Length: 463
Ligand code: TYD
Ligand code: MG
Image 1 (cartoon, protein in one colour):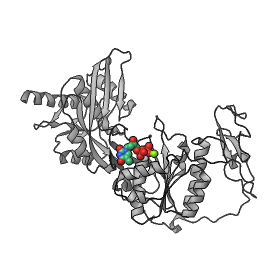
Image 2 (cartoon, helix red, strand yellow):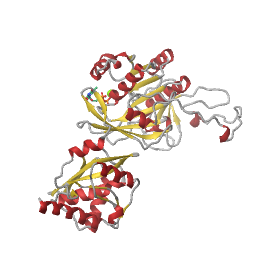
Image 3 (cartoon, helix red, strand yellow):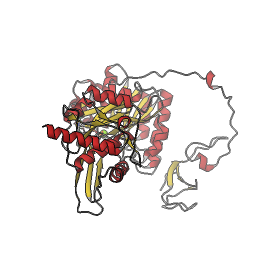
Image 4 (tube, rainbow, N blue to C red):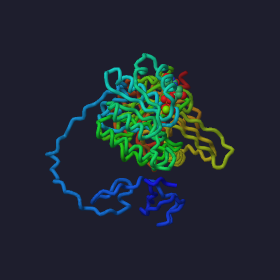
């Protein structure tokens, strides 16, 4: 049952009802009723929450005078540096006072660790901070802080609290400059009957925290969990609300993690930071290319991709395994890449480069737990699979170093150029990987496969 203060409103037709039902009595849509706080009746204006649906009399408030954009003060945002270079870069230079940053990631990826480290640095730099944990006890947070070493993290003030109004009151009283809320799904607003983590709760919690943050100019790092599919659990609604959405990705079993901005009102969404989870917290990986390259194998099925992580070139190893299948349809197992992209590349490889894989299981993986989501990865997928299918190791040049490549594949088998070709080439050359197979010099997938497999055979003969 809803509390006296709440109603259920249909997210499709706006129908309002006092009781929850699986199906909207207004339009018949299933699972569309979302609990909302009842709007406080104010003269002339529909209140917050169910205001739109209530259809209160509008237009009775005082009017305001619009100003031309050139007359609007463009304030340079002051920034609070977290002291974690990779994170500050992704944020566009640090946290902006009064802004809400949502950090989404799977459980165990390191969200609490990263936010604790950021607060520790800010606290050490003399900023007022507060860590609100609605997930762990103060003792658990202390253990993590001890693990981080250095002692700075132990100075961060913390509360372990799940009740929203208590948290808001504490924020009012303590007036931190930076605050972490871990997590938005575990805080609970007592005025709503829905369970913590439900859409209604998450929306209410984030909305209230935002109001306070804007009013008191508190920079808030809001931690959110993501579902298996990668969407922020429940609070997709939050993405509109907050100023910045950071995605924390990686595989829990692996040590590498990337943080990227998918939305940023105060900076670009091009930047990405690479971290490694160590015994004493997250460590920035400043030269990720060198790391990944040092670990690259030169076995059949391996190729180096000159990828772009935002505006930064990154060399990663793409591996493929092709084996006879007993299944119909055969297996396609992909990690770190888009499945549909891989399916497309396999189709083009069969049709235009004579490498048919209809009866084979194909596994494709980006090594190190990194995710590459860009069309420039197509050629690397194709060459890794071709190399695996032909059991030929790919090497670049006479020195026998790993073969590097990049390029997008068209459906007719042509290679298409991708953004930042010069920076990708530069990065490859920095590590002595030359020549690089790329669209400018090759033109078609068939030519690229021939060049790649040819290089391998030459190396085998020379050895
Ligand atoms: P955590 O930050 O609690 O993840 P999240 O808040 O995203 O759920 O930490 C995740 C994992 O990292 C946890 O399994 C323990 C490990 N870890 C380290 O390996 N080293 C460390 O220094 C810390 C603090 C955690
Ligand atoms: Mg956590």
